[in-house]
Amino acid sequence: MSRPMRQPCRPQGASQAAQHGQALCETCGLLGSPASSPRCERCGSRLHFRKPHSIERTWALLIAAYVMYLPANLLPITVTHSLFGIQRDTIMSGVAYLWSSGSRAIALIVFVASVVVPLIKLFLLTLLVVSVQRRWHWDPLQRLKLYRFLEGIGRWSMLDVYVVTVLVALVQVQSLAAISPGGGVLAFAAVVILSMLATMAFEPRLIWDPMHHAAHLKE
Amino acid sequence: MDEEDSPKVGRLAACPECDLLVRELQPPASRSTVLCPRCDALLYRTGRNVLEQALALACAAFVLLAVANAFPIVGLEIKGQRIDTTVIGAAARLWQEGMPLVASLVLLTTTIIPLLELAAMMWMVLPLLFGKRPPAFTQIFHVLRLTHPWAMVEVFLLGILVALVKLSHLAHVLPDIAAWLFGGVMLVMTGLSLAIEPRDLWQAWQETRE
Image (cartoon, rainbow over all chains, first blue to last red; front, side, top):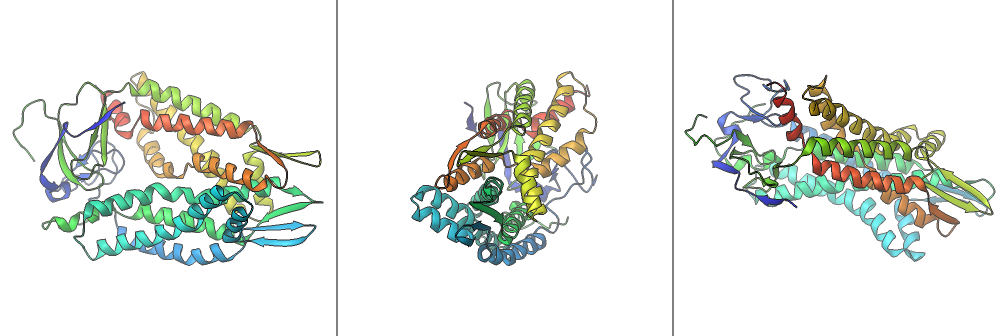
C-alpha cells in the first residue's frame, strides 16, 4: 500500500496561488497565469481563479432543493393496489413499515439515506455558503472537511429512487398487488440532483480566502 | 515566480481545495501519495504502472456492466409464477407508469454514464499506451469530469438490497445474476479509480509530444 507523505512538495510560504496570479486549470490541473493567457497552455480550457459565480449558483440550487424537500416527504413515493385496497406510502411510512416488520437495520439505512442525509446536507451547505459570504475566519480546515463530507454522502440519497424502481418493476401481479410510483419520487429525485449540483457549485477555496488579506480575486 | 532552487525541484502546483501554492519536489521512485501540507487534500500519487492497469480494469468493468444489462437483477416467485426484471426493463416500467424523467435518471446513473465513462477511459488509454495522442482528448476529458459524480453503481446495489428486504415478506425473492455482476462492476471500478487519476493521463499525454 502507498502511504501518505508530504515530503515531495513544499509550501511556498503560506500563500495562495491566486495571490501570485496563478490559477489551477479545472480540466487538467496545470497551473497557469490568466493575466498572460486566459486559456490553459496545455489543454486550452478557460482559466478561473475560483469557480465563477459560485455563491449565487449555490444559493439558487440550494433554495430549489429546499422547495422540493417538502413534496418529496409529503407525497407518496409508492401506490400499492391490492385486494385490500389502495395504499399510499411516503418515505417515512416506508421506514416505519420496515422497522415494525423487524428489518430494523434496513429501516435505519433508509431513514438515514432518505430523510437525515438530504436535510443535514442542505443545512450544512447553507452554513458553508453563509460562512463564505460573510468571510468568517472560523476554522477553515474544519469547514473544508465538512465540505468533503457533504461531497461524499450526497449520492447515497439516490437509494430510495432505486428501491422504488425495483419494487415497481417486480410487483406487477394484477390479482395480488401492483405497485406504481407516486409523485414523491419525482420530487425526491429532484432534491437529490439539486443538492448534488449545489454542492458541486460551491467553491471550497473561498473558505480559505479570508485568511489571506491581499487576495483581490476576479474571475 | 522565478526562484532559485536546486535542479531536482519540480514545477509549481496549487492545492485544488485550499489553493495553497506548493512546489513539487523530485518524485520518489516508490509508490507514494502526496497530500496538501495544509488541508490534506490529495495532490497526486506517484510510482505506479498506471496505464496498463487502467486499461485492463476499464475493459473488465465495461464487459461486466454490458453483460449485467442482459440478465435480470432480481427475481421473485408468487404462487409458482416467476417475475424478474433487468435494469432496462425496470426503467421501461417506470416510463410506462408516467415517470419518464425518473426512468431516464435511473438508466443514466446505473448504466449509460458508467458505460460511457469506461469507454472514454479505454479510448484515452489505449492510444497513449502506444505513444499516440487520442483524438478529442481534451473534450472527452472535460465531459468525463462533469459526468463522473453521476455514475452510481454502488448506490444502486444498496437499493437492490433494500428492495429485496422490502419484498421478502410478500414472496420468495432472490438476487439474480445481474445483481452479482453489478457487485463486480463496483469492485472493479473502485480499483480503476485507485489505479489512475487525471494527472497520470495528462502526464502520458504530454510525454507523447516528445
